[in-house]
Image 1 (cartoon, one colour):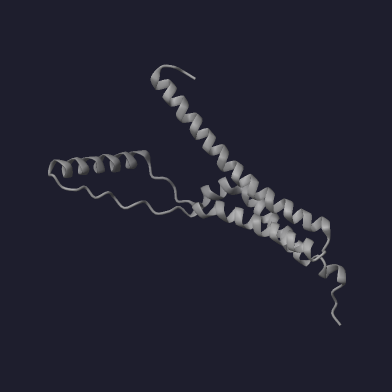
Image 2 (cartoon, rainbow, N blue to C red):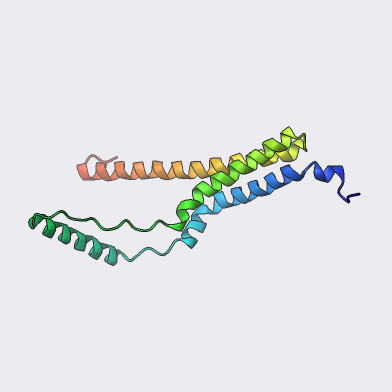
Length: 152
């Protein structure tokens, strides 16, 4: 016979869902810090300015010579770019484990917790991105208002 009790087997899927949900929720809250840690440091502003000026001069020379200017190769993708979809995916997998646990008639409390943690992680991640977009729009409006002299 096995040493597992029926109670332990009845909580396996919901337990895995809870663990995945906790990992997704923690990653959602810490994603700005994690992104800062895994991305390479940004180049100094002087280097970016010189690079931009060089590209503008090259484009002007190509236009004056009547040639087609070939744009520089796009910068490589940052590792943190995959962090946000990963958090949302982990959250949805945790919620799916919770739903599967409910279907298998496992402990309702643990299954509900897995669903709540998974959906909560996804909602937190989406809300962080939406807040960032709203702040960007407000910043653009403030700059345009300042430049036109209207104010906010």
